[in-house]
Length: 145
Image (cartoon, rainbow, N blue to C red; front, top):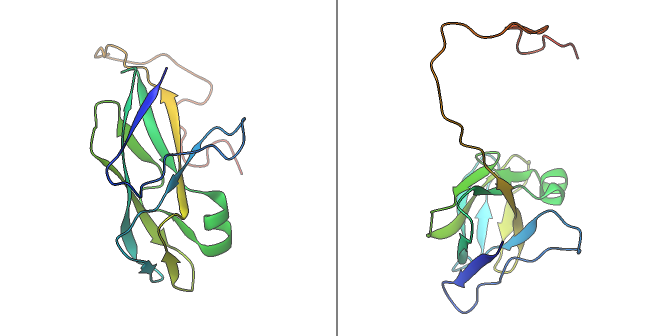
């Protein structure tokens, strides 16, 4: 499989894996000017790139970077971004500041990770009932702490 990456402007950085065994590719910020995110605020940060996977049975997932989350409270506003395989627009990362201090995003900063995952799309069939399981309909805490 290949992932074609188009720079939408010359300054855009291609995604890179930090190590040869990294699951995700770092995504780099490319705002026109530094963006300061106040506590509780959400800002959409451009990356300057668009992508196209060579396979259609995959999804591109954008995950937060653990260091930004743990040290500064900066994470994704939508927890995980899901990019469909047929999307060809710019990758935009919605960051939210859960910290107590303003946080400034500058061009070239690593702001998220891109992970490519296989997607199953089964045929759906309506059912009058579902098979019984040990857990049943128990949700939200049913298996304990």
